[in-house]
Image (cartoon, rainbow, N blue to C red; front, side, top):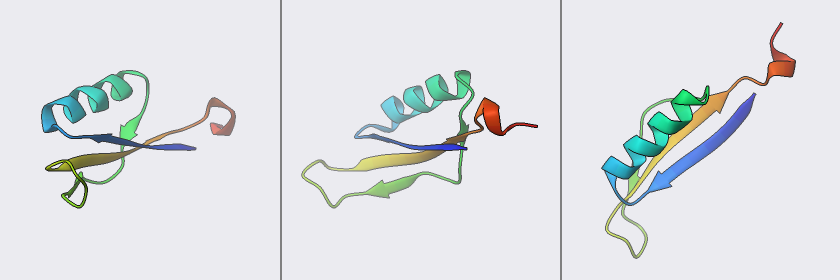
Length: 57
């Protein structure tokens, strides 16, 4: 199993990145998280998972 976290300052850009990863076999894990604790207005995050080919079967 692989895990990655996608982050962006724009919900539209996050959506594009998530959709790109979905087309590569990744799946969203849970909902998005939104933070405003940095210098940018907001940071949008989405956890993604993917099964390794070795771990299937």
